[in-house]
Image 1: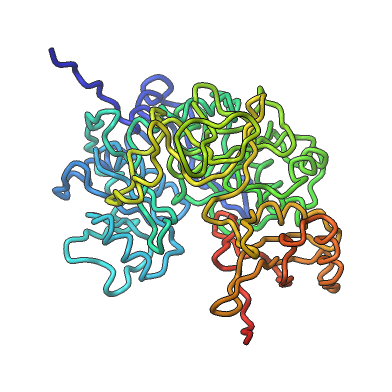
Image 2: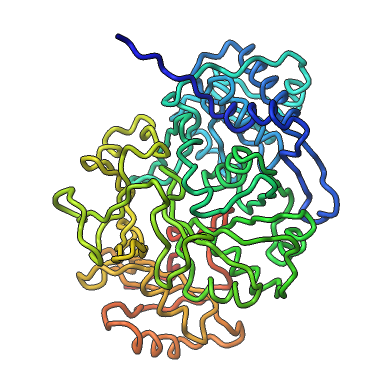
Length: 510
């Protein structure tokens, strides 16, 4: 007796059903960061529904096959959002790509994914486009939106592929993380476990659309919950955020820790400066010590943290029902099965307060289908019934989890393994330090040291000895950075995350 597979399309789940139930409700607002008084664009659920089904019909007309990859390089724009969901609506695989990629990087991802289409607002460098790659412009996308012949949502199943996101691999090549249509359902535990989201919310995300954090929190989640997503275009300078949040009427705001640190430092916000904002959401990297307390004391608003990864999005968090506990990220969201496994050895979860690898059960519906054509790397992250993405942590008796860094970012100090987060946490308390990031750097072919890259609290005063003395008082000798490198700013991705690979000492040594 055969069982029938339940049809499930992520785009229909996020948009189509709301287009039927609340067609006139505002789903998307687009604002200019420099002038956020009035929206540049306003889209209802019915309008988005029709637009993405029109684009899906346009893609189908290109003689594409089910599952073909659709590269999307349209920046933070409504077209980028529409194309992402249109590809999924049509049964294709959306492939978001950063507009910051070099020609070499873009060519590598297009070749690895074997993308059939590239929608881009930029000219395609010579040698990037294959003969069989169809390149479409924003004008082509606009014409598809207006074609007036929408097709039905593709009859996909929950385990069919929906989108492909490239993330840093354990090797030099980025690896593709393939997500299923069901991933939209798999995000449900975070709605009350982290957001406390309501259908009257307006969600504003500070990140770019080539990142799962932005695509999920900034678009998918508000739409699944019948809420409104806000997109901002233009230069996202930190001093503008309080005014933008207030003028757009955002009730929820999401960003990486660096954005909150920059808002506090450069915008000088006061209580009431954020308009209708109910609380803020933070993920992407470990925040510096004291950031949550400083934000709450300055703004009077809660800041809820979460831990996630491209392979499953956020799965551990604080929220309206999970109070903040210093030194931890929060608890596993309700319905998630999370454990701490030995770094090496068997797959049995460790007892409370043991350090190891943070693992999530492979039955979680939000977990990726796998790595795109990288079976060896995929085999490395699955251990029995568990997925381990490389995050180190410990869980206490209450279920609160501390994040102890990435296993592949541990620094080697004279044979000792040291987490950069531990050294950063200590140095961040130094009065002479405004921001800090640490990394192991090679100073000779046979010698590596721990270096601290510091943005000084006073740009005119760069006191190496004071920082080293503070480190010596607060860290074991082997954890004290051998080198203090002063910088004007820390290297960050367009989404605000620290780029540890860019932390280098330029001067050579014998």
